[in-house]
Length: 125
Picture 1: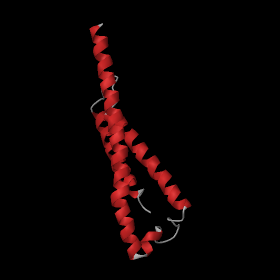
Picture 2: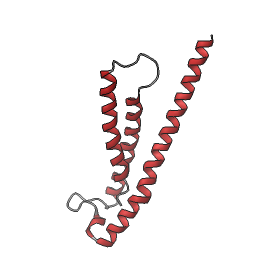
Picture 3: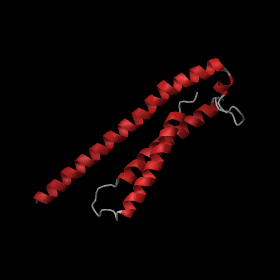
């Protein structure tokens, strides 16, 4: 019903953090090393979360769970359905946001490990 709001909220927070990191990296002059900057890594997470949220919002719109008029979420019109919606947001929405973040963290860690290993090989040669 409204599970897409949780990853969208996380995406908004990550987008702000990415902008702040980008400004901080600019201010510090930035490193010339080949490693990806933290702001770009966070930008990737932000894009994953925004994209998933947009697809889910479209799916909910397609099924009539979102309307272009107040209360926008059809479940918000009835108190019993609102409880179900909040429960879904707390279970499904949080699980989706955590899964996307965990996969992003695993891929980011793998990229870091591989690039560090390659740099060590180049130094030995």
